[in-house]
Image 1 (cartoon, rainbow, N blue to C red):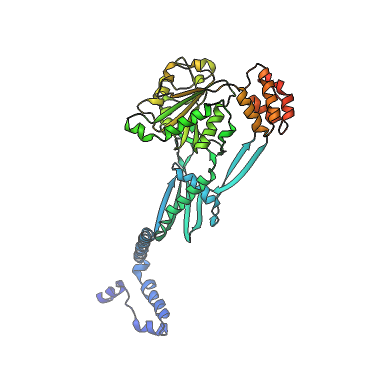
Image 2 (cartoon, helix red, strand yellow):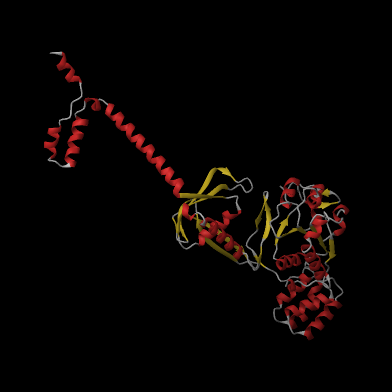
Amino acid sequence: MDSSAGGNENSPPSLDLEKLREDSDGSMSGMATNLFQQVVQGNPYFAAGGGLMVLGSGLALARSGIIRLSGLLYRQLLVDMEIPSKDKSYLWFLEWMAKHPQRSSRHLSVETNFIQHDNGSVSTKFSLVPGPGNHLIRYKGAFMLIKRERSGKMLDMTSGAPFETVTLTTLYRDRLLFRDLLSDAKNLAVKAKDGKTVVFTSWGSEWRPFGQPKAKRLLPSVILDKGIKDGIIHDVNEFLQNGKWYLDRGIPYRRGYLLYGPPGSGKTSFIQALAGDLDYNICIMNLSEANLTDDRLNHLMNNIPERSILLLEDIDAAFNKRTQTGDQGYQSGVTFSGLLNALDGVASSEETITFMTTNHPERLDPAIMRPGRIDYKVFVGNATPYQIGRMFMKFYPGEDKYCEEFVKKASALNVSISTAQLQGLFVFNKDDPESSLRMVETLKSPNHVF
């Protein structure tokens, strides 16, 4: 066999164009099929694996190109907005999305609102909110993909809950709708609290709403002795209207109030009504909390929510003569000096209104009574004849005759009567002033049960 024949055996077969035309009948699809058969099936290099390698490399390059092209299109055509769970707008957005009508969700979570009323009855309300997963909404004509993700490894250190994020994706041209959406979510949250007072309690290193917002209590519903209520209201309004005066003179812009007196005299009720009148919220701080420390107390008091009154109830129960009352069962980690520094130290907050209450002012250390920590103190005592008459007329309008007789009989008992006792008696005898008059003797016992 000659060398030329051997060379022909090892060389790849050439294309037979005439045979390609004859077998394809002139059609493009037929020509393509025959071409594939001649080049691929009849090619020994392809059959040996070289062609597969080339084909695989081509597919890989094509895939990479598609991925890069899709990434480019994504960056040019779409825009994302991420809302972490630690941001205030996170809960606002979830609440808004739960009520948005144009929403498609396949992943839902349940939120249970459990309320136990004073009469012992229980109300339970279930709300279905968007859970972790993908959701689709339509907002002002624009479609948005919502992706709620929950991390299984990361935790929110303030609450111990899994860290979550919500990512909104829409067309780049609709990116300005994000601001409108967040504004609508905020307005919905504010509207839900309109006309109500939100009570905050400390949770870790942050303030969180405690229960549902409460209906504002009206100031006329709290009856104190002559001049007490008007004096406090005047002082608070004067403080709020003179921020620049404090600033110009380098005086810390804060005000501390102490209401002291026997239990049931209306101290906390008045603070709640004052907050409602000022359209403020209330932040309750429990100084006897087991995990409370000086650093955490300082952080909380310097990060009070806007337009809020800080309330420290029973201030005498946490400290007594500069010593912690561990023998009474309180195990607070807060020191007396830590509280003083939080009230008026270098790191104390500005533009704050602090109310403190106590039943035993004699137990308070003189260090906490000085101006700058307590600027206004007033005694809120048991009911006077003036208060008894005003409360009677509040519950029984127009019953002047019974009111005079009730005040005389109550005063003749010669015992201390709290406003809480009077309210209990009047509530028990709704719309029946004669019955209240007959039962006036029950006021002798402060713990009488009707």
